[in-house]
Structures are given as structure tokens and as C-alpha cells.
Length: 114
Length: 113
Image 1 (cartoon, each protein chain N blue to C red):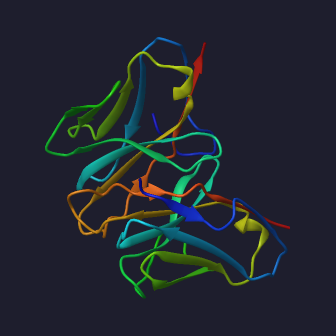
Image 2: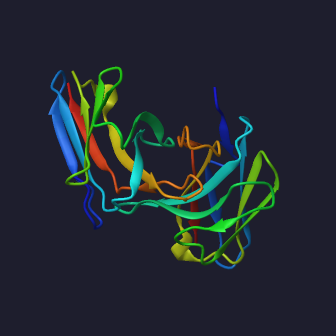
């Protein structure tokens, strides 16, 4: 079974703190993604990576950065957390093939910024 | 179906009924579609997918229908069970997008025993 794990299920941080969200997958997937999920807005793509050290901006990259130093690990960084970054953060991974675009999701990290 | 705004569409059904969840997409270049199910407190889980060269695909108790003419996708769940209660998302992909899916906003399905 594919497993995507996220470092925390719940996280509470203060405004201005630097926040690291970690994601690890065990299926040797090339692609990894970070989404945020807010009520009524669905899943919005923050950043994705299609290979080690490669990254592409998604739809809402402002206020975030990412790091992919190893194939299995994709980190989301909030350089200076703000209250409008309170959200559910979902990590996903997939193969880089046109035969199957299925993304496998982690359980999510619910981040609260106070 | 899917809609823009803060309130998710909802569907309430009785256990044993069939459910139909709709999704409209806007990108005529989209050539692959997925339905995901998200239970409370969990990440989305894959249900079924369909490519644009098909108009119907069946899985276990689920059927996806694709109408490219009107850019509409539906998920049919047969004999709906309380365990089917969740938020359902459609997602699409098309062109050279490195596997990036575009998600709809979701529909809340509630199944009453």
C-alpha cells in the first residue's frame, strides 16, 4: 500500500513564526504536491515538485516555500506565519507518467496560527 | 453540482438509495478525470477515474459518466451506505501539466440509515 505521511496532524503556531510541514512517501513517486484546503474552496495547489530539487509554483504560492532534497521527502515552509494561513494542509504524491495521474494523499495537518 | 462560493453543495439520501453527484468542468482540453472521497479527518482517497476517450466506467458500486459535449462529469453510487457519507471531489487534468490535478470544490453526501 502506498503510504504518505505528514509530520503532524495538528499544529498551533504564533504569528511570525517559521513553520515547517514535512511529508514523506514510500512509493518512489517522482511528483509531490502541497495543497491547502479551506471550507468551500476545495483543494488549492501551493507548490509541487516533479523531481529532487525541482519545484514549481502552484496557484497560491505566496507566503510559502518548499524544499525537496530527497525523492521521498517534500517540505512546506511558512517563512513568517500569518493568521490567514490557518488551514488544513494536504500533501500528495504520484508517478510522473501519463498512464496514471492518481495522487495519493496524506492525512493532512491542521495548522492554526494565532 | 460543483459551484463557486463558500457553501458546498449537499446531497442527502436514504440508505439503499442510489446517489448521483455532479461536477462541471471548464477546460475543454482536460483529458483525464478522477473522483475522490474524503471522510472527516482524513485525506482524499481515490474512487475511480476515466479518460476522455471513454464516456462511462464502472467500478464496485460506482459508475462515472463523462459528457464532453457539455463538460459534465457524474459519479453514481449504487445502494448507498452510511459509510459512503463523505465529501466527494472531482478533479481534472489536461495538457502538459506535470500531473497537476485541478479540483472541484466538493459535494457533501450524507446517508441516513
